[in-house]
Length: 180
View 1 (cartoon, rainbow, N blue to C red):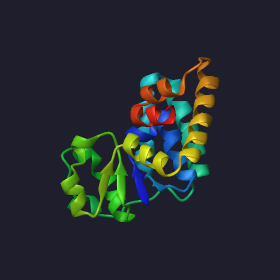
View 2 (cartoon, rainbow, N blue to C red):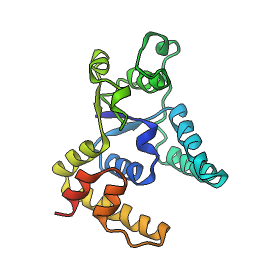
View 3 (spheres, helix red, strand yellow):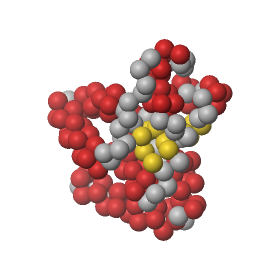
C-alpha cells in the first residue's frame, strides 16, 4: 500500500515516528512532497527559531532515511483537481501522481472521501491505520511503540506511560490496544 502522509501526521513527532516505524516494518510505502515537508518546517516556526531549525534537521534526516519517499506531482495536475480547501490540493496531486492508495490525514473535512474515491484514493486517519497494523502485527507495532516511548522519555526528561503518550499524540485507539 502506498500512502501519502499529510503534514498534519508528519508533524507532530510521535505520530510521525509511529507511522514511519510501521513503514519500516513493511506495512506501507510512505510518500510526501517537498511542499509537505516545507509545511512541516513552517508549522514548527510556532515554537520559535529553534523549532524551525530542529524541524529542518529532522526533515534532512527523514529525507536521508526515506530517499524514495519524496515525489513531485505532474505539472498541471493541480489545475484539474478540487478540494474544499485549495491549500490541500497539492497533497491530492501528489497522491494522484504517484498512484497512491490512501492519504493519511487528521483533516477529514478537507479531504472528502467521495472526492478522493473519484481519483481511486481512500482517506485514513493515523489512529485507525496504525491500529489496523497492530492487529496484523502486534509484536512489530509493540516494538515500534516501545522505541518511540523510550525516545520520548529521553528527549522530554519525563516518564511517559505508553497509553498517555499515544493519547497525547492523538492515537488513543492504538494506545489502548498497545496496553491491553
